Image (cartoon, rainbow, N blue to C red; front, side, top):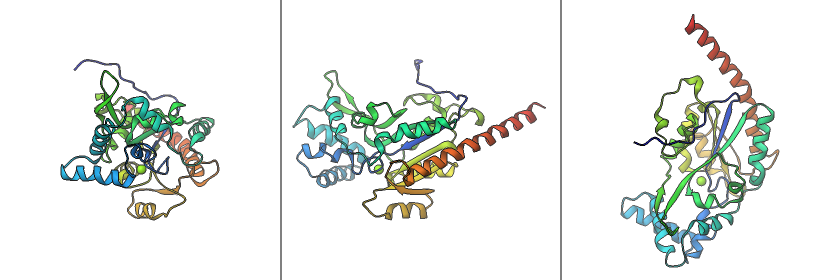
Length: 294
Ligand SMILES: [Mg+2]
């Protein structure tokens, strides 16, 4: 295999907290494709999902691959499916209250306390649409992991480049943990001693809304991180109640990202706890090292 220069992050002086977000119904009240794109194909959202889930079922196909197939196949009859078009639909996506300046505020809050806060998207939605949102354009995310397209030499989407479903979402947590962020970086399998891991799971926060987040939530919970379920304040809490009873999440809060709201206060508490926890962890590693060298 040829050697490539992968984007790698290494442990620095300040501890890092990685906040990982699902996108649909976590940062936005509805699926990103259902806010203009699906309608442009002449479908109602339910009709589109029923058809694409039907294709998946009839063909033992991944549900994300089947909706991407429909996106490519049906869109070409209407318009040119290129990056610009997808980004334009992404720019129309509505965000929950407070999302627009949340990332900067939380990052600043962390920095004032001596912690680097990084924001990551892990979504089964379309990367090119997420890249069209204002928050992505402002460079709020360290990395966006999502389903994406391969574009041909004319710039037309032809084939899935990446498909992110609920179980393979978890691989990105390991990439973030080790700083091997590039999707093809085989360094994800390298061994790191515990004190050289850039973002230990105890410093990972996963925020999501539903079943598709369960493997990530469970993994983060199991390894001492923080899983947070969010719900649309205009709807019921049934999903988050079930997730907390099933031990998937540790906390839930309304998807309201404004300052001094529940979610804001919760994340700030997590940051504060991390500041002290990391001091204790590094003291532990120092004690351990001294004993090993004695
Ligand atoms: Mg979701």
